[in-house]
Length: 88
Image 1 (cartoon, rainbow, N blue to C red):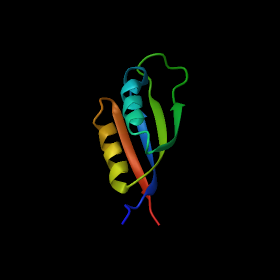
Image 2: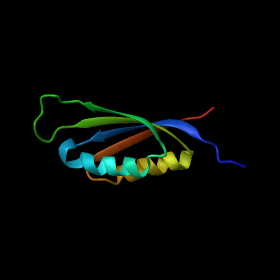
Image 3: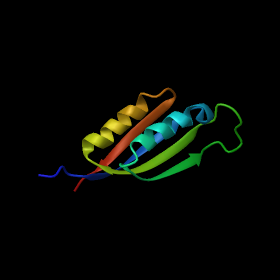
């Protein structure tokens, strides 16, 4: 029997986005099969140093895969990630 796929979102707060975004991008690229789309928002457009960033990821995968990706993102320095998994 096939494992059930779910739709979900992962919202990621990136502290000091200039320093920490490369690590987030690496993790998302490694898990590219789960990522359907992503949107990055510059929440402090006039900020020059230690700026926050916000990334929303639309994902499709098993609940376990989405949770594991969220956990991996949370293990990164300066990152807070929360996921929402949609089920029928």
